Length: 508
Image (cartoon, rainbow, N blue to C red; front, side):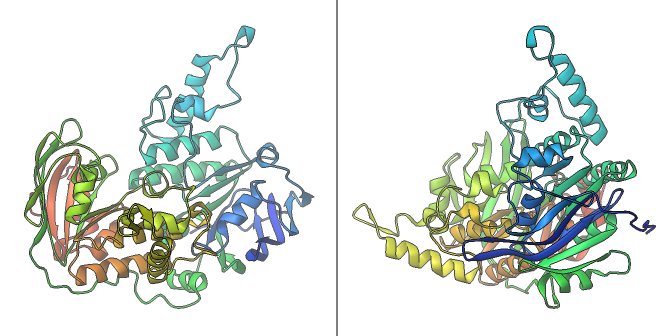
């Protein structure tokens, strides 16, 4: 890759910065330099201190020691607005949009163009939003309310909002986590354009191929400490993983051989008008079935219908041979179904509840006697699963929102695994999770299958699908387009089916 040498002083820098929260030392003596015209990756496991570093640059936190510098001069941010005014725009991992406002209103919130008498110029908002969306190469209506948008579309709105500030520094925290391959390619084109125009980009991603494909330099953090800042050119995946986790990562997809047993989940001709049509498949005990397809193909919607969150119009779902009624999640749970949803913050967790209480939500009956909660039982149950899944936390009583993204995902998994399900549906189980935690989640799913659990895994990560699935079901425009055995599944065959091109897999 042709990488220009950095020249001059950095646009934005962090010098020997440390930050503690009580007894927890989030950052210890960390330095970072961002140069104009360069994409700089920030790598590290969840809990390594990346989020704290980002919030320090964004004016949310002030360093306890050390300093933030702009063009070589120390600055003190009194809040996010100071950082924004200094030309720093941040796209956080989780979208933070106003659901009842339109796409355009979200992008220009607080700075809408005005007409005479101070009235908002809606035509100008629409035109400016349309230009930004067009620049990103996506199809999104500026006047559409944000409520109901997919995570991918919400992320696009966040990116457009950041671009609208014409920032000198763009900090992107997992911006591609829920995007399709085509959307990622378009986003990378935008980032390269910004670089050519002189912007400095700090790019955070757990997808190593994105770091190597987009960035010129990378800084690695581990346990809140600076490990290395170096050029990407000449590094390998193994080098970067070793710096991130402090050890060699033997296997990212530790798929065990498992004895495939009887049918645990049967879906027959399931249809929800306008969403998905005539969907049929089976998942047997001991196997992991991957459900692949482009964002919007209907994968998550099928999972929600199977679990009973959404009602279906026709078809049948059976667990262990016993049919389930439509729209009854409690009966699905009682039958042995568990669903780990795609959006952990909005659908998987209660953010203003404790870690302990979140894990215990699926076991309220088991932890109550005569209508009263047995707190000791709830705490013991939560502690057991927190230890099993190696959740990193200070106290079980802490709010789940204080955890890193990967540890929040582990809490969602713990909540559902505590029900001892026969069928586990996991939707994007490793979205936004670092490579070390990703390997742990894969190992856990493989062990569950070996123990006889039937696993339906929905993922946009093709290597994850190919590495973990015994069979791959591919959806295209609301239908099962192909069923591909593990031995025949390749990126080409899966993508061909996902895009509607004739593929070699068995037609479903």
